[in-house]
Length: 476
Image 1 (cartoon, rainbow, N blue to C red):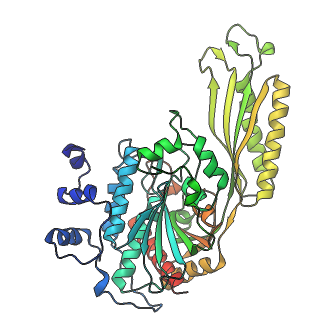
Image 2 (cartoon, helix red, strand yellow; image 1 turned 120 degrees about the vertical axis):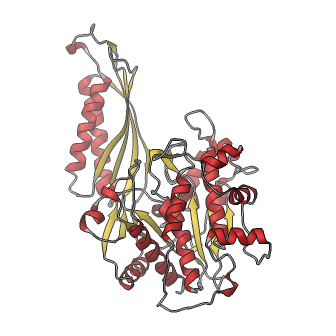
Image 3 (cartoon, rainbow, N blue to C red; image 1 turned 90 degrees about the horizontal axis):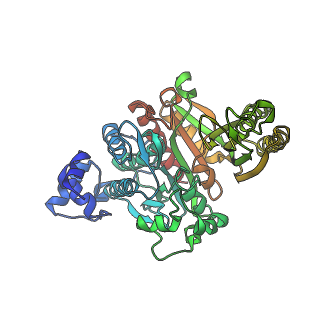
């Protein structure tokens, strides 16, 4: 790696020397003056020996919002596309560098850091009763092409800062606290969302399927993982599975990815449910032909069949009887893709969601019937209608909700009970632990685009609520 690369990321050379040379930073006392320089640069209490334990409800929290914003900005430089966009795809060079950056921040925060065979990263602050099940938090740092720098990242870097805020306050947890950086929440490379958290939650079907999964360049999942330093001598991905009693609670901090909190001037969203998503792939096949040579009555146009199905999806989602039903065609591909050629094939990928499975599944059935009816009417073939995943919804745990609400009250922050219609790793962590989520406002609800933004004040509010929530849950 060249010095030019170092300079391009605008980090001090002495820091980067350690950043790339030492994956994990020891938290034991060290009188080495170079170590002291790193300690001073980080601003974090690496040595905990001088901190006292305060098992009280009155914790004075100080959040270093400038340091957190700087870290968010620095992490965004590990991207395959230029600023202000962020593109960080699973197991690519920038993904590996970003992971190393986060692991070093965990080490500087005094956390013990471990990884599993697919790259889920765990930073642990040992409690004074370490045999008790831990309380966990965390999110992801991978980013879809040309997205922003806050999605997922707030829940990882914000969690590290929450731990630092608790340490600065003198708090000591009873239950150990863990931060999880989940592998591949986004489905960009292998078409599987929440890959890391699905495996942690014990998906045997996924563990088996990944042995034969390839990306768009025909690179296998295991080959890609090994190129990033994972799964080196291991094909059995079931080793990633966690037991149902691994955590006493899990809570995730995240930007809302919708405009409600900002529009209503509310500081905190307390998530009660996460919508149940389903993904469907559909293919229509027709005869194609020259755009000028085949008259309209003689056409078997796969593209028009796809267009009609898209309108049917809108109709059935709108008329489902549930306000929470949404249907989206996120991918539409026409073949051969020439302006003067009638489409001979149309490929659609459909997302259908609701917080209740019954409404969502009813809409899926109606979409399937519509696809068959449209194919018959337009004399094309419905060559594929495949449900890729059909996950159940998740409901936040009452005790975690109460901890978030109590934390918000104690911090004099306004809050609102909310539904998350977006996918999160919490959806799968809910299968093995009591789960909750904390939302903060984001500018105009923008997400998955470069304009994604959360203000310093909203970041600070979210980190404080997360820190106080973790403290409450750790003392139970």
